[in-house]
Length: 483
Image (cartoon, rainbow, N blue to C red; front, side, top):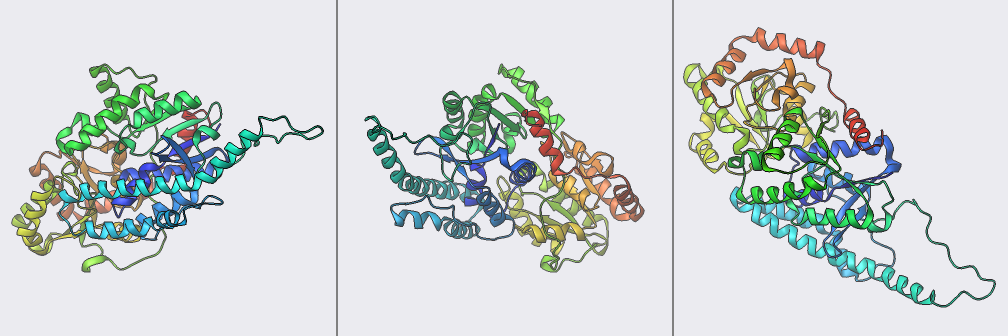
C-alpha cells in the first residue's frame, strides 16, 4: 500500500507568500516524519489542471519548496522529463521560483487587501505555464505510446516475444499520472489546505472512481463555516464548497485536536452531512525543523526584555487585544517596567484598522515591534530570547505557537478557549480572549511576579515532554492501515 500525499497547496502557498503559516509547517513536518519512517511506501502529488488529474513529484522538490519559505533558499526546478520538447516552456517552468520571489517582493509593498488578488493572478499564470510545460514534456512519450499501440495490432514475428509491461509497483518517475501508478489499497491523503483549489471534491471523486483510491482527510478546524466573521468572504465560500463536497468522500477522517473532532461531529450533524467514519484526533508534534545556528535578534531587541506573539496578524489571532492590553499596561506602569511587545509573523487580512492604530500610536511610543516574515532561524532566536510568549487567539484548531513556546522552555499566556488548552496543558497561564481586563491582570502578574514565570519555567523543564513528529506520523500510518 502506498500513501499518496497531495502537496499542491504547499507549492501554491509558496508561490504567493514568503513564509509558511501553521498549516504549512504542520503538514510538512508530518510529510518529513512519514518519509523518514517508510519512504518506500510514500508518494507525493501535484495537480495537473490540463489533464484533470494529479502527478507524482519528487520528495526533493517538496523539501526544496518548503526550505525556500523557511530559509529563503530558492527551490530547485522539478526534473525535466526525458526527451522533453519545447525547451522554451521548460526553461520558463524552471524559472518559476524566481518569478514567485519577485512577485512576493512586489506584494510586500502593497496593502494587505491587494495581496490576495495579486497572488491569485500569479498562481493562475504559474499553473498555466506549468501545464504547458507538462504537456510539452509528456508529448514525446504519448506519441511513442501511440506508435507502440499501433505496432501492437500486428502479431509479433515467429519466435519473437512481445515486450512485457512495466513491473507493477516499480518506483514512478517524476510527472507520472496517479491513474497509471496507483495500486489497489492505495490512499490519497490531503493533509494540507487544498480548499484553495476550485473543484477539488470533483477531482477527488473522479480519481477515486478511476483508481479505487481511498481518500483520507485531515481537518484542522471549521472556522470559515463556524466563525465566518474571522475570514475573508471568498475563503468562506471556497471552504464551504470544499468541506461539503469532501466530507462524504472521506474514507478516513482525522483532526488535529479533540476540540476540532467535536466541532466536526456537531457541525456535520447539524447541517445533515453524513460522515463515513468517526473523526479521530491525532497527536500533534512539537517544534519545527531548524538549525542550531544563532543569529542576532532583529531590530535591536534584547533577550529577556520582550514578550513574543508569533502568528500571522489576522483578526482571529486577536492581536488587537494584545495591543489594547499593552496600551493599558503602559498607562498603569512605568514604561521601563513594561517589556517590549513583539508581533512576529506575516501581516494578513482584516487588520487594516489595527495596523493603522499601530502606526498612529508610533508603535505604542516605541514599545511595539513588528517583525514581519521572520525566517526559521530568526524565529527560533526570538523564542529563545523571549521573557514569555502570548497567544490570545479567539479560535484555534490546535495552537502550534503554544507548543512551540513550551518546546523552547517559555511560558505562554494564552487563550483558554477551543483547542488551546490541549496544546498548552498545565504549563500555560490562561485568560478569556474576549476580556482585555482579564488579559491585563494576567500580563501584570507575569511582569510584576518574576517568581511566577520562573516557577512555571522550572515545571516546563521538569515535566513538559514535547510530542515528536514521529508520533504524529505513527498515528496517521495506523489510521490509514499502514501501522
